[in-house]
Image 1 (cartoon, rainbow, N blue to C red):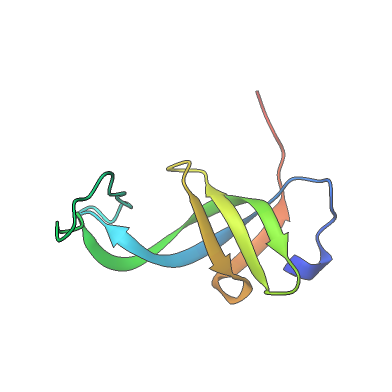
Image 2 (image 1 turned 30 degrees about the horizontal axis):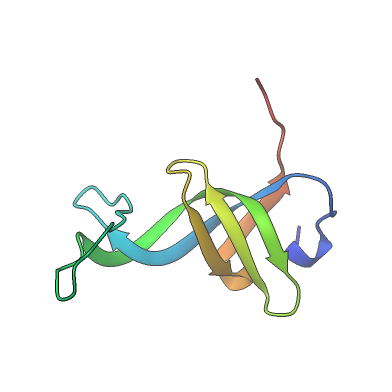
Length: 91
């Protein structure tokens, strides 16, 4: 399935990769309230996960995904997304 073919109004997800700051275990870290000159925690690295597609931009070919593991949002290019499929919500 291609991102341009997903149906609006349905829930879709994809595997994605992005470059972000990671801790020693390879998990994303987020800096809060950094002072000017203060070092960001973690080191830059490649992060892969599964995300629910929140926004799909056909013009810029970018998607905003909500990572199912961390609940953080990442904006990634379509080329960094694969295994696009519908979401089956289970309670």
